[in-house]
Length: 287
Length: 145
Image (cartoon, rainbow over all chains, first blue to last red; front, side, top):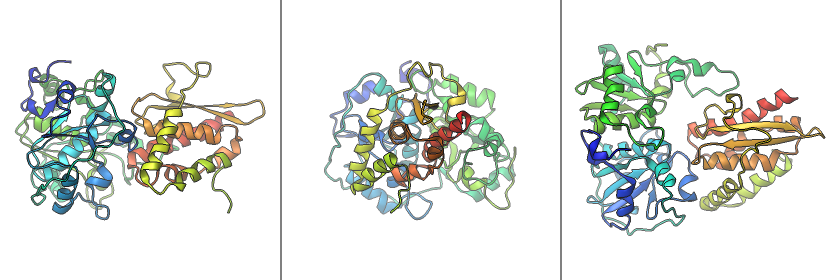
């Protein structure tokens, strides 16, 4: 693994190393946040001092398919002792898949003082660093949240339809089998919550984890990433791009890579993703 | 009231539902995950065959089913992702709760058990992966029957 600053990223300071986190465990201006898919992981042991933010119970509204509003986000940050000046460092399971999702939701509220720990939870564990089952308690902050602003990084279905009709690029970050629709037809397996299998017309398929080094879960270098997205898939930094997956979590990882590591200016995450598009009346799909 | 599941599995479901505090439930599930033992080498060795791999399970779960001399079933699991705590917990629970039962009994277990054990908090992907473990157990049993 190379040093983060030498990998050629446009915004290399958005990533921190496990070493950096280890050196900053007692830094009061930094809050380490673990976000996982598996709800048992954090309580089974986490980075000392880290709090947990759960994507289902903490970040999503429980009755509307939507994210927190201003008040909910404000309460969430307050109770975790995060103020406007706190640097929040996210890490988690699955190559930081859920960490990037939480990072993305934080950007709906313009919380830019946020970073991802390169390599995620697995790298920390594999380096035999300290884990604890102790859940820390921080004194409440007086954080004041702005209104949520979906315009910049979030796409809704009507915008996606317009995007398709204009012939603009999309990135489908699901597996090749989900992209072709093959996975809805396998015997004995539940389908993935969509009536039809396939992809949104005009989308290229780059499975989200392509951006990760399999040996240590760190992000690939800028040159390697450019090769994947620009040389192989012909995307360009100035393109207007929408990323999607099944419910918008894996695609927030790709959104992070394109926006921060490669410096793309206009990437949005379509969180309705295939569970919405695959069931939506009156919209085209491709196989 | 008639049990929804075979008795040993029912006991575990009851034990979990006894707790009202979510944190107590979670620590019991973690205890099970810590009890998980991977498939012994006499049954299977790495690299495991894809035939035994659970689709949709990000925890890289594998399942084997053997019939004992008395016709009952013994279950074996391998959870290759070290971060797959929920999958390890489910593997340990299914082994403790269903090994020693007959094919017919295990085939009759509803995938509802995943919700009854873990609650409704599971993400959709996680739910597919964990129910996939039980479904593969049941498909493998049909093969040895």
